[in-house]
Structures are given as C-alpha cells and as structure tokens.
Image (cartoon, rainbow, N blue to C red; front, side):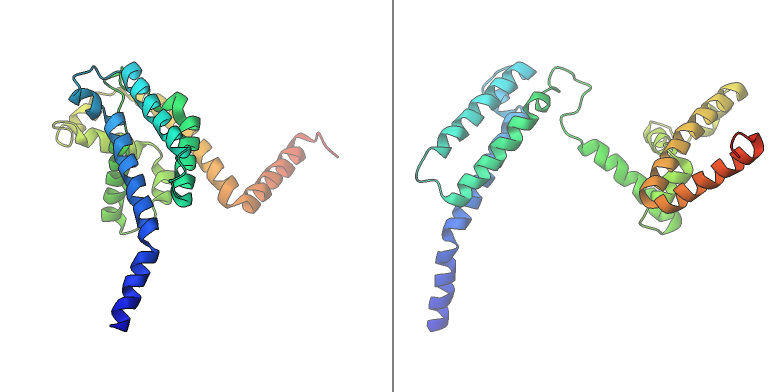
Length: 215
C-alpha cells in the first residue's frame, strides 16, 4: 500500500506538466490542420495564400490572448511564448506555397529522395557515411536517382545517354567538374584546414619561384 501511495504521489506531481504537454500537442495539431488547408476545406473555403494566412494569423492572435490568462501554467506559458516567437520570425516566408501547385508545402519528398540516395550508396559500399560518395561524384548522384524514378527510367537510360552529342557531354562534364571543385574546396577548408592552407602556401611558393616576381 505504501508503494502504491508513492507511485500515485509521483503521478500527481507530474499531472500539471502532462496537462501542459497535452495542451501544446493539441495546438500543434491545430497548426497542422490550418497549414495543410484541411480546416478551410472543411468550411468550404478556397485554399490560397491569403485565406490560409488570414486563418493562421487569427489563430496566432488567439494564442496571444491565452498568454494573458492567469490560469496558464508557467511551463505552458514558456512553450507558447517560444512558439509565437519562432512563428513571428518565420511568418513572412511560412505561407507561400498554396498559390503554386508545383511548390510542395513540406520537404518530406526531398528528405525521402535524399534517403533513397543514401540507401543506394549503402547497398553498393556497405558504408553509412556518404561524404566521399558526394565528393567524388557530386550532384550527378542526385540526377541519376531522379532519372531512375521516372517511368521506364532505369530501362531506357542507356538509350537516352547515346542521344547526347560528344560536344554537349564534354561541356556538361566541365561544368560539373567546376562545381565539384568548389564543393571539394569548401570541404577541405572546413574539415582539413591545416592541410589546405599548407597546400596553398606550397603552390604560392612554387608559383613565385617560376615567375620570379618575389626575391
């Protein structure tokens, strides 16, 4: 009985915190309903940047009014203040996708696309870290992954490659190499700065010896 009373006492101490978490979870779900357009569709309204923005602004105003309520607990108040602070900073760019059918609302598809590239590389090499893969092949790995996802993409890839002229291929390859060199340079500066600077100094010393500009 004493053990049961102790457990019940612990539950009572956390009751207010759990209630605050449930309230915040409800607000997060409400935000998702507004941003997804489900609330407007349920009301029979048109989903656009203007209508979604107005609905979201009204909902944020309701949250600001809740901050003035003395019954709101301290933890819940801090969560609300943080949410409204982040929302105010992101609001100018938050609602821009509803008037453009080709612009996705979330980056879920992009994250899934990146995950597919990582999965393919892991099956090929058995490695989880794909930095070397990107540094070696650059953005071509993304082009290939997008290509094979097209209808009949994996089957007619060879036929499409044969249609590319040699001059066009050399031009695109040179462009890819320039972009890849820039990525390699950024990687070396961030992760191998000492070696990168030492290499620059060696190249500079070699160049000055050849030209004779410096004594």
